[in-house]
Amino acid sequence: QKEVEQNSGPLSVPEGAIASLNCTYSDRVSQSFFWYRQYSGKSPELIMSIYSNGDKEDGRFTAQLNKASQYVSLLIRDSQPSDSATYLCAETSGTYKYIFGTGTRLKVLA
Amino acid sequence: KAGVTQTPRYLIKTRGQQVTLSCSPISGHRSVSWYQQTPGQGLQFLFEYFSETQRNKGNFPGRFSGRQFSNSRSEMNVSTLELGDSALYLCASSREDRTVSQYFGPGTRLLVL
Image (cartoon, rainbow over all chains, first blue to last red; front, side, top):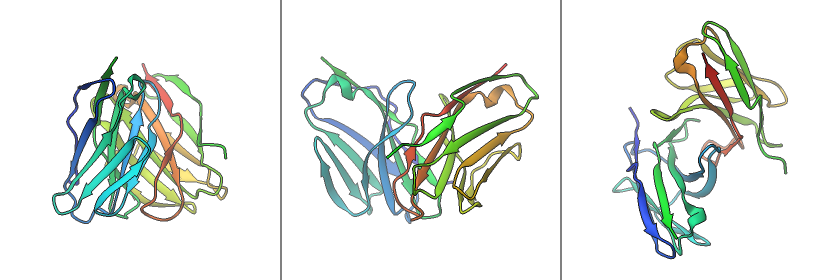
């Protein structure tokens, strides 16, 4: 059973700090990884995708992938109260099926 | 470009009834996936369609079925509804490439009484 694991949180960080969200996956053939943000009562919104080992930056967001350790993370710099949401990690191994973690709830304290 | 649309947005049904949900993907997207989201189980994959063909399915009973039309619009059907089917049903679309990003619709919130 392929799994994606995330700490459910809540992860609380002060405004302006760096929030670090982590995700591990069990399928060694996983090819692509995604981070989604989901506000309460809303649908998931794509933030980042990453396919290769290393870092990928987009504005205040940085995704990090380490395939050897089967680990993917999301860093949010200069965290804002509007970043408070649940962050979902997802992976696919190219079989037209995406596996999602249960999400980490982030609270940014003003 | 318009996003993924889903109808209806809210539904209330009783046990034993059936329900059909609709999803229109982003223009040019030919892959449509369906998910069930509940507080306890998170996002669970139901099935994925491309060119009117189901390419993968999750571990759900046969009461859950779907189809895709030639214009890429998709429907999912749940027969003989159970209380446990109460959930947010999400549709996501993507290009046909098997590893690209998916984009979600607003979801249909189903309550089974």
